[in-house]
Length: 66
Image (cartoon, rainbow, N blue to C red; front, top):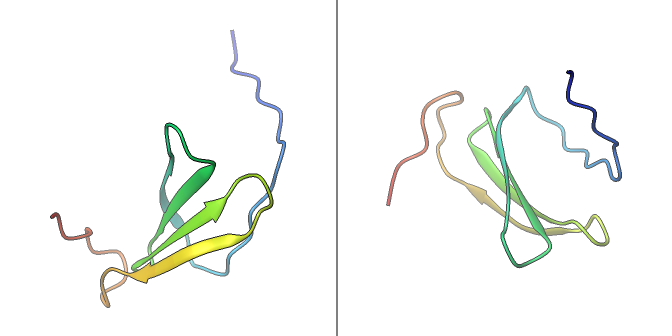
């Protein structure tokens, strides 16, 4: 049986591609990891950008671990 999802909100950011997406377990936040080396945290209630980080200056490289 195919998975059926309804799109509730759409977040837009100029980038080559999205590498990963994660939702915070308690806060209304969505984290997007882009191939450009940037991370974006979006508020899922009002679609506002909460914070952005430049993790690496080499596009497509794995993010450094803490």
